[in-house]
Image 1 (tube, rainbow, N blue to C red):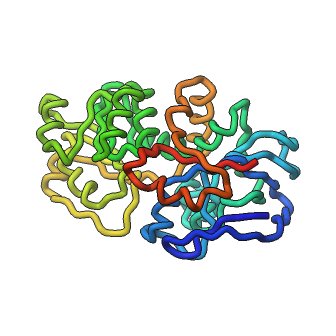
Image 2 (cartoon, one colour):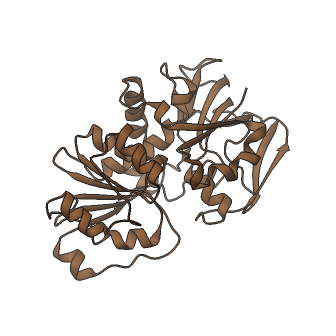
Length: 337
């Protein structure tokens, strides 16, 4: 079977190897669609933490169930799966926080992932398609990341949420914050994405920090109160550091984006507001189930996400075009027959 491997930063190769041998307790899946995400882009660029090369990327996956003994699944079923393999024994797992397991193995990050024609995965992580098509299923994992971030922030209808970064995860954050009833402000330097969020996602306000003073604009939008929730989806340290100035008194700052360095902020300013800082990592089965329900009920429209497509054999020549901002990519998807 064919697979694509990131041999080292800035180098993909397409290779062949034998079909995976399904072990007891595993399911053999045929990959049908692969979403390209920020993790893949950072891995390709050499800026992804927790990473070693060579690595087969890919953890946003829609697949066909081929064989296995998983209860309730049969050959031909459309499926996806939770790509965060947890140990079940650490303090996080014991407390139900499998998304931040101390010994976590993320498919396509710590272990080889799904940029492959077939994979074999533990049955316990499978998710029924529940009538969703492959376009919907390939979005479940990134949407679950966003759903988890909004849940971590405990977003309520009376909140004003600033989402920083209007990539696929940021767009999911906007969607779920709006579903929660909040007012949403979007900040990005890409005018196409900002206009997309305003027109397609009904963002209440947009800010381009290259053209506007962010603090002044936020003060204007919030009548001087500042956002009660700030969520970062940029993974940019400078953006994160600056955002400590954007939080309201009693506000929450949630880091969904990830970067390699250290954060710095004024403790007195942070303390006087009794601000809350938290990270949001991966997602739980609860988040995945919620996303499936939102997709089934039409609260999330996959056509607003998937803007670019390529066949598996054409992924490598397309990848660098997808990560070029001028090409206005929201979500690129690799398709397999």
